[in-house]
Image (cartoon, rainbow, N blue to C red; front, side, top):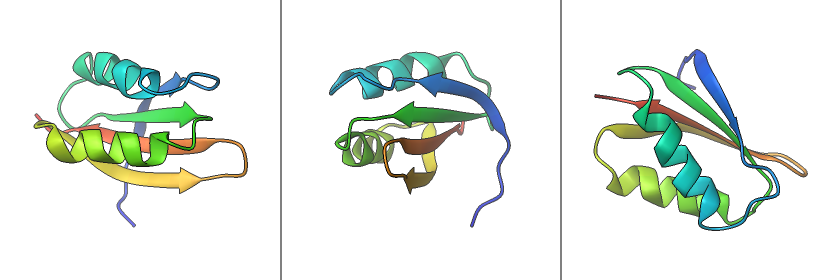
Length: 80
């Protein structure tokens, strides 16, 4: 597992597609290179949505995802 330190937490619980991705993009834009955004979501679709967004977006990297019982947690690093 990759080591990372969370810089900021974004709570998008209760919001459905496409809001978790939209809010993640807005928040990651405000971070510096190497900083990590923790995203807390309740939308099960966020697992594939955020992974797909990170894969196709330059300057970001999906570091980890955790599928909890009620909350899906995503860790996104700004790379540039």
